[in-house]
Length: 378
Ligand code: SAH
Ligand code: SF4
Image (cartoon, rainbow, N blue to C red; front, top):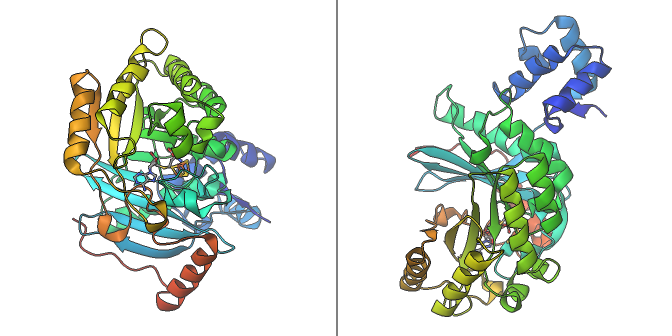
């Protein structure tokens, strides 16, 4: 089996090149061809010696993920469904805005955490993605979009690990993928433009702070342990006090930063004034000086099996005002790509379980064996 070069960060690629008797600067050249220029084969790499290209041909490959489908929303959001084998699929979503282009990336097929309001959680866990499969989403999207928009410039300026899966339960594959996103010879994204979102895997938050302190978003969703236990089951293992301590420790490694607390607004469940007050107390009082944070309120995207409802917009705004009035910077997330099921927690579309993913993939393949060509980028 040849090595898939998308699996390597620059250090890993340098070590691989060394086994071939090649110097480090060759690894840098190779890495730049792959990530900056989107090369898919070694023949394209005109400044590498023919002998090296021939050598690589025998031992290495650059293998992305097959695209099962592509949907473009009226607002310019594009969602891709990628085949990761054995009937599993993951999704990535590109969200264009005036001043940035954000790619939402998946880290696992399914998720083992099982949050009540999340359709990925309801699917169950299939498997971890490899580093190459995480990077492949960015590699494909960036180079597809450059062609689509007919530009040589970078299109994706931000990455959020907010697709399917809990990234901190796939730590070993995540970190080299993050390094490729950050590397100047890779995608060159700044540390603050790459966000890992976690349901609160406390020990891995500590390791991330030490290994690769990118921006951190924590899916809070509740101000008390009793409520959070019922919404985000991992809270039973790492309750709020431990989670907030971990947030504070994280900020030691990422000074001048803040934690983004995500809070999915569920009608009558966590959206009342008393919840807002409890949240203010939680983040203010915790550990004496509080946690430097912002809140991002997410309108819940309902799906039939959840048995939950989206909070009415006036309730969301009233909740946001309570937090803002207490001096906590609070934003309400715009829902994007609603018409193509690309909004948060809908990344599994209408899929109820993994068996149905298989059925859907087969169906889509028959109907639409090639990825759709998107038109009319807004
Ligand atoms: N597993 C990680 C990252 C993926 S989920 C995490 O939980 O943080 C990304 C964000 O989408 C999380 O904040 C999650 O709570 C939120 N989310 C999940 N399902 C949702 C839904 N149905 N409606 C709105 N937000 C949802
Ligand atoms: Fe997993 Fe995040 Fe969904 Fe919870 S919200 S089930 S952690 S993907």
